Length: 372
Image 1 (cartoon, one colour):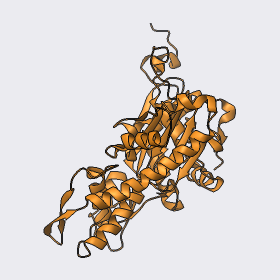
Image 2: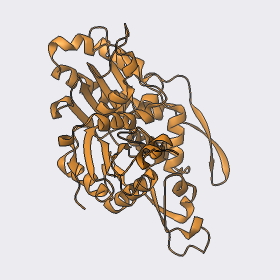
Image 3: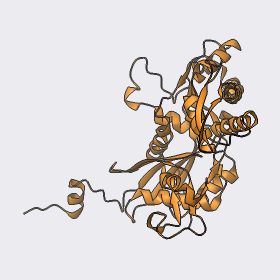
Image 4: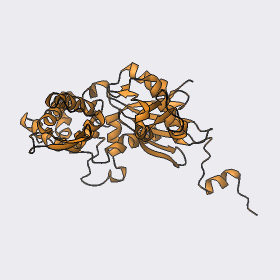
């Protein structure tokens, strides 16, 4: 006859005693996309790993019965985008901070429902915030998560990207460059571009710069120029964003860029090369200025190594040729052998993974309690 205790039986079947095992959450709450990673602290059991568009859809007035799934009055993420014709879509965040508190709260509840953890588990969340997010922005995040997470830590997103990108198994490998030791991370998101000196400790305010100009600004600039060049051609912002993501580039125009679109049911060919180039290069110039500012703030003895480890992440890192152009701008400005790299196509996952690592490393005294 077995003499196993109840707890031993639970552990032997892979079930954590979640009542005593906090559920740790790493969250990249982005303007366009929210990435989530969650595991139990002690057992390491995974609970969630998701990427969802950051959008809330509220049912429009007069919707006929059964048009929306389950006659829902609120939908989120991909489901909201699929049903957008029958919804009022709201983006909770603008420029990386909460702009619509009600939608932010509703979206936070939706995030909580994705966790599927034990009702008895204490939830602790590390949430990425833009570099130099002010007190009001931080209060907005904490208010959104009251009653969902019992404890929270807010950490700048570029630092979390570096932590998520770090490969701990390679730290003793010859030639491996630890991104957390001495680097400049540049997170080009949708609402803001955040730059951060990452030098082995949680960054101070002077180690960070946040520029309210990023992917959404490219969309706006492109839309404005297209409206001027083709006044009879009205495209949705989602179509503008799609064209940007397919054709964006930095530096010189790589030949003409002609796109085929449908306007009023009729096919049209538009040349967007020069206007898209102007929009993208305006962003690159702002990144260049921000990088110079932070390099000047770094310890002079660290600058040579720092210049070898400048890393671009976020959706803007996928702009064609952006790393090479930024590297050339730094070199032409007299910096010694700068090296600019890109975090890769999996950029969306690194902030959330870094946030989860930070949650596992956090001391009890570092967590902020959220009172309902």
